[in-house]
Image (cartoon, rainbow, N blue to C red; front, side, top):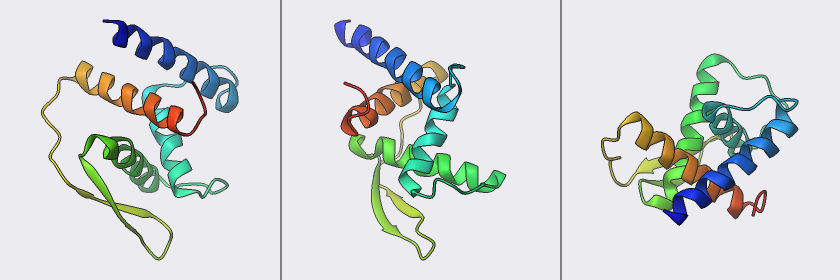
Length: 118
């Protein structure tokens, strides 16, 4: 139970900090934060992305976020600098709430690893 409380507290800190930095304080949704991770991982910050590229950025983020859990493994960067991952293990079937918790946990871990939050 303490782990759940700690995750919730760190999630709140993360959302507040990212929202202040990227959304003038308007709370960012989970998908928006995943998108930011995708842009961070690609490293092409000052580019306008098309709809399909935005979906690809979210895919990059999800692969990167779930890599420490053993679901994906980084494979290579393509000629355009986009990272590619291979599936190591299929994701289990999760309910929407369980997916949300897994992604929040992975995001908190990611931003702690990057020393963005404690």
